[in-house]
Amino acid sequence: MPLRIAFDMDGVLAEMDAELLRQAELLFGKPAAHPGADRAEEDDAPTGIEAAESAIDPAPDFNPPAIQLNLTRRQQRRLWQHVRSIENFWQGLDEIEPGVVARLGALAAASRWEIIFLTKRPDTAGLTAQLQTQRWLEEKGFPLPSVFVVQGSRGRIAAALDLDVVVDDRLENCIDVATDSKARPILVLRSADIHPPSAQRLGIGAVKSVADCLEILNEIDAAAREQPGVMSRIMRMLGLKEPARS
Image (cartoon, rainbow, N blue to C red):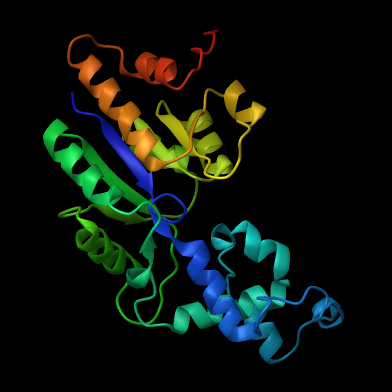
């Protein structure tokens, strides 16, 4: 059977962090944020417009480390309000690894992989987040992409869709997949040199790029055509041991 693989979007394929930093600099100047500037205001109970701002989901899944370190919660809310006002924001993002989406599309077609793309992107002005994402993927070289804008546990989604592999850049999502499904999570760790011990214990493999991930998936697929045992092969390719069965 063909591999059924899900790819996260932001931090895996699309370069969201750099664009958020650029938009933060447009709002707050350089440096992108001023720690402590709004701290006293932030501790006050919000009223009026502030209360309305607080009611808006600040999209916690989309706070990259640089933003978390430098922006107050109020600034993050302002940033996300601003982002949501930008027409077709998601369609304008850069590709993190130039050419990797087209390579994924070519491999999926050649190997008959079933690929879906998962994202928690909030809507912005213009097209829906789903349609923006579909158009972005097509522009980058992946024809007819299946995009799901989702909430909740990635593990439950993986279980419901009977996925073999989920590729994500967030450890908590990979933990969800490892604990709530039979799918094998692959964690994209671009800047960290150390594979988190908690990830290793749960059988979560780590790669430094999507290109590396595609190499592994391609080798697994080639081997699986000759001999079954997809999950055990994924484990070995990622340098992991199959967890003991109770």
